[in-house]
Length: 621
Image (cartoon, rainbow, N blue to C red; front, side, top):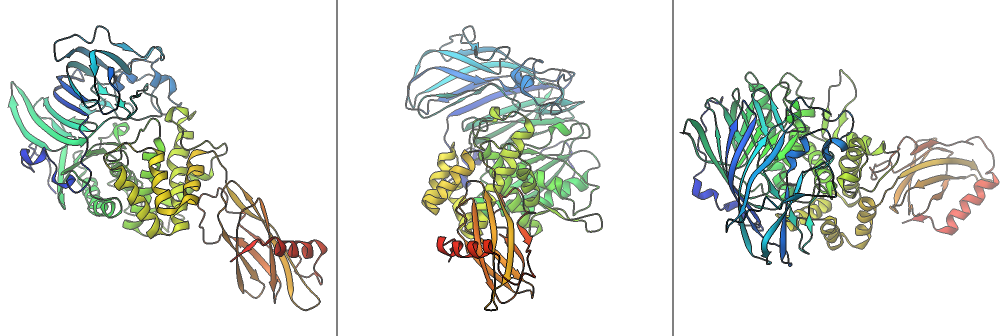
């Protein structure tokens, strides 16, 4: 670890970066959208002026005569944008002191045709220009390539939604016009920037020269291959990387830097002066996290990772992911066994897989990145910190809180369920979005793991990651892998769990026993099920002597009457005591004390229930 001295030490030769050797053993990332920019940061005016080229190859089977560009930064250009109209109260400021904007000043085809004069925002979304339709001078055939020359100015807002500036600190994200994804059938996946939504874009090669005043430190997507060097009175450095689908950078004139090489990856932590302990804690965490993620989900294929710990007052820049660049937080003064910041850091690194390499649409299928990443984060928390992935483990201050309990709490609190596979813009509030897309999706995956066993489910999830790596997976991609690896019943479970709204609960609603004339104690338990999932569970009878009898029930109906036959009176009954169904929303009613312990004969209803249960075959093997 070393403090940053405003000089970046070159870690890899430039020529080796243009082809990533670690990608050779996996799928090669496609080159659909390549961006080459020279960008100049003015930290006084909070602007980035840039020019360069966008090179786009038609990946579909259909010729297209138009392009759609995302201008996400325009979501922060005024109070009536689609982003600002759809924000939930209390999430982002309704009126930031300084609005932002992306202004394209020139856009020309290779033959010089001016494309800007006929470009229009989406007329279906009034008062919003976060997307732009660009008519092309001629159709682009499947597999053909066009090149556009572009010049633009990005004006950053005061810090909002992980973008903007605070004082001289700048988080420069969503700062350039980005080509929307053209799906294989020729349909453009363009959409306005919604406050719940994140992004969706194609893989390509990014080659960005960043110019900035002396005294500033830059952290950016990808490795630095040139500079910093003084050019025309400004510092300049160049970052190049392919196999990615976004580019962001940060700049501050007070950054310090801590470095560590983790296997083949150079990790840089940019932090505030005096926060060396926070930086060290972050590096210690990643030294375990990187190999843990690689064991579960395959290699991290890039040569660099930069972690930004935003300065005080800029916390809105934290908790965000970009290719090879993440922002998190710091709690240098906090106890080691309070790990909420560690959780955020692991989650943002996990997005290098679920969003980064598995580039699903964060707008249309947000559970595929957030929910899967949330599951992966909790599993790696367990790998690093023990059973449950403890978030808070301070015995003198209160009960332990682990990652899975936190996710279960989020899912259990859903009073009015929605399908998890809704678009981000279909959730009415940020809170409803979070409890479904993050917590409930993670709990569904956790349930599959608990039912199938860790080894089998981990292999299944790895098969999905391997298949979807450097692609645009959809829920159908995951369902297909589940069908192949686990069979049609589990595919049906996944489709129901992710694709429909549901509530799920088991409850022991009755338990009784009485002594028969033959001296044996007979009785029953009533297990009620609310919800769609036919998953067998154990019912455990415990008698007054402490002996336990485990009965497996099919759990395939709304109510199951489970017979009891023992040598002693029944004391209590519990259902699923092993917690194999984390998707349950209430567990306090999973156990019940038996009544009728002193009865001398089995009541009629008990006798009927006992023999009906036997006749219906409700007891499984």
